[in-house]
Length: 139
Image (cartoon, rainbow, N blue to C red; front, side, top):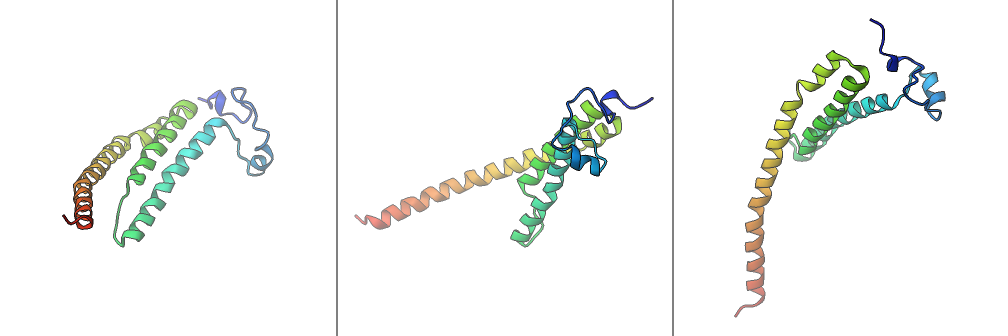
């Protein structure tokens, strides 16, 4: 079975991206909107490691921030759409689809943790404000 027609170097499905052609031809890369989606997914997925590294350096311990899981979900969805719609590649679909439920579950757990922490901070802030107000007006 040959390549899908939209995967050929001269696809009639997408207009040529003239502004990218000179640099793309030098690198022998065919640029299509779906490849930009795929590259974006890969880039966002890779950014998550930098987010984790920066958060860990700031905390001086290993930390996985919410942004790590957000980038995991968004990057996987973009890569999944590229493999499923443009490439029609079952290996790529399985590779990006399999861990997606784990990313979504971890994102849910992390956001729930963040919301609990925010809720716990609110009463302490209210008590501090009442203490400040009481100290300013000693009646």
